Image 1 (cartoon, one colour):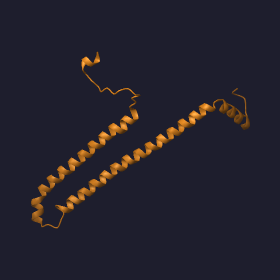
Image 2 (image 1 turned 180 degrees about the horizontal axis):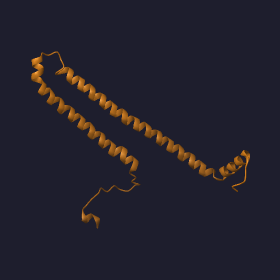
Image 3 (image 1 turned 180 degrees about the vertical axis):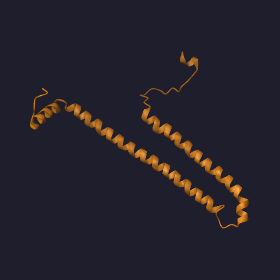
Image 4 (image 1 turned 90 degrees about the horizontal axis):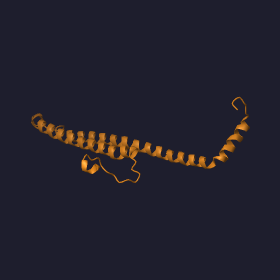
Length: 140
């Protein structure tokens, strides 16, 4: 009953009896907890690697910018050559950087959608995938 006081040894014996009665369910809980722990740790590693990938892309972007500047307009050229070549350098740099950044952003968004999003929420359960279709003939 609620008002009844028990000693620690009585509590241990009650827990021990419940453990014997539910030994299989405790094993199931332990296995499930172990699996959840492994999945959680893999998720942490996955998230860390995603951020490291983004960091590596930013480092590559920085290095590419330094190289382009050093070997083009930032070299040891006279001022007239720099003034004349600046519009070409600017156009080339913008096209290259915007192209690479656009490609990088597209690839990262596709990866996030296909791998991260679908692995967390999609559960096919062995059914054949049928894409969304608005044809009225297919609905019949």
